[in-house]
Image 1 (cartoon, one colour):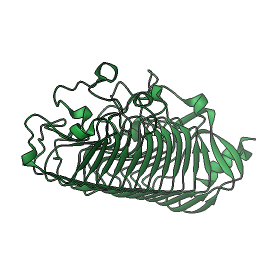
Image 2 (cartoon, rainbow, N blue to C red; image 1 turned 90 degrees about the vertical axis):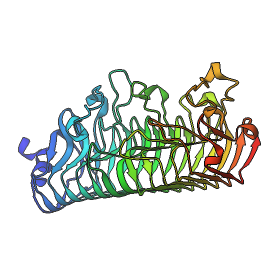
Image 3 (cartoon, one colour; image 1 turned 30 degrees about the vertical axis):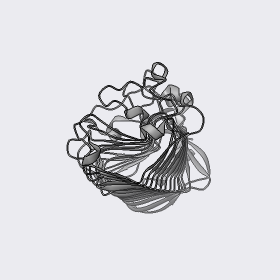
Image 4 (tube, rainbow, N blue to C red; image 1 turned 180 degrees about the vertical axis):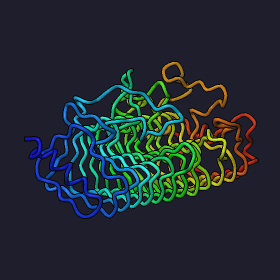
Length: 432
């Protein structure tokens, strides 16, 4: 009888607005998203070898969601999104719409909430985001496992989904010790249309095989990205979002990001860029490792090690310290610098320019007329990113640069950028 069904029992238990809820044991099919009472507070939900599994007829924003909640803790359960039956091809949301309002079939969804804890929860086969948090505060995500999640566009390319997204001015967040495997879109990331995400940490996570970015810090301030390990970023290559030119990145940056630190992260086999600093300023990138094995053709979307850019008009590329990083096996150059008052010091760049540009221009597309020489240089001081920002007043010192013809292409300059406008000293350059 319906009244005695496990699903009915779970819904009754989760109608509580406060207190402690212990879910029943076993795999429980869910036909429609379970919405916690609006304004629920001081509520702890724990599993007992419990799996909430979206049924073949499931519909809803998420398996479990809450709006305007406070003091919610979810611990020790599993969520199965039944992606093989429920996945729908869908593109990216329009620019004026939140991800939370656009995507259905998520795992957990919290909006306009505070003091949210998600601990030791397992997600698998989620069609959209495993965890989506929007405009919320004091969010703690720890020891979460996510596998085989995310969906594609109608053209078979990833639409950013699958991992953990914190959006729309989420503050005081902490994502630690999580493991993500086979995610079609981004692994762990922040995004916002207007109000920046603030005061967060993404630390000690392991991300294995994602089609987009392992980690992205989007439109944020005071975020620490530390001690994360990523492997096979931008794979499978067939699912890369070519329509959006979404080059996969180990740590990506978007919007306006400042007062942030990317430190002690390690990425292996990145089919794209190791660290993209598009919008990053007044921050530090240090002690990161990027190791690409194999040949240039093994990474068809391979690019640079570390790249600065300035797409967002609210920022300027300045006061960035790039120090003591180890970059090995880039398809093209090592570090691209624009703007002013940046420090590039003590980095080791090894096996740079695997494509052997410009010799293999026909094969690898080495020709870049706007800033000639950029693809074959170890460190390149550019004239612009998305907007003009000639490299001036920067310090480039004590770097070790090895690779294809690096003795002569060690440090390059865009037209109009002069070495004398920057401090260039004590760099070691050698061919390999």
